[in-house]
Length: 214
Image 1 (cartoon, rainbow, N blue to C red):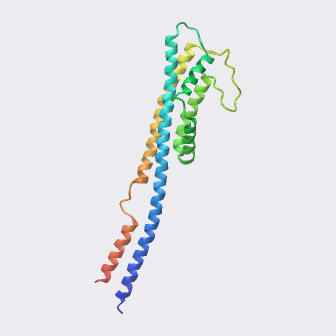
Image 2: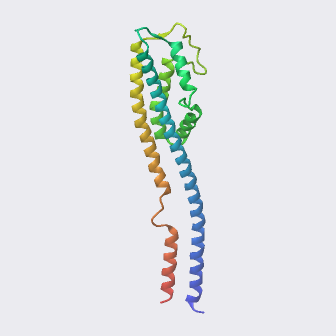
Image 3: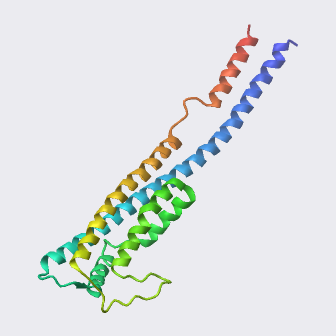
C-alpha cells in the first residue's frame, strides 16, 4: 500500500475533525456574542431614553416655574407647599420619572459598564438631589421635612431654573458619550471577522492534498 493511500485519508479525517470542532466552538461563541450584543443594545436604548426623559422632566419643571412667576403678579415668595403640589402634578403625568427604569439602567451600567456608570453618577444623582432639595421632597429613610412655613423667593426660583438648564446640558453631553461608547462596542461585537480558523483549516487540508498528489 502506497504511503499516500494511508496519509491522505488521515489528513482528510483530521481536517474534517478540526473543522467540525471549530464549527461547534464558533457557533457557541457566535451565540455568546449575540447575547452580549442584545443586552448591550437594550442597555443602550434604555439608558438613552431614560436620560432623555430626565432631561425633559427637568425642562418641564423649569418651564412650569417660569410660567408661574410670569403670570403671578407681585414680588411675593411662593410657598414650598404650593410648589410641591406643582411638582406632584408633573410626577403624576407621563412626564414623571420612571424610577424603576432609572434603577435598572444604573444597575446595568454599574455591573457591566464601569466608565459609563461613572458618567451617569456624575450628573443623574446630583440633579435628583437638587430637585428634591428645592421642593423639600422627603426621600425614603430621611426625616420628614416640614414645609408649611417655608417659601422660595423669586430670586431663588430664578437661580434654581437657571441651574436646572445648566445641568440639562451636562446630562445631554454625558448621554451622547454613554450611547456613543456602547454603540462602538456593539459594532465590534456584531461585525464579522475577515478571516477565521475555519477557512485556515480547509486551506491547510487543500495544501496537504495537493502535496500528496504530486
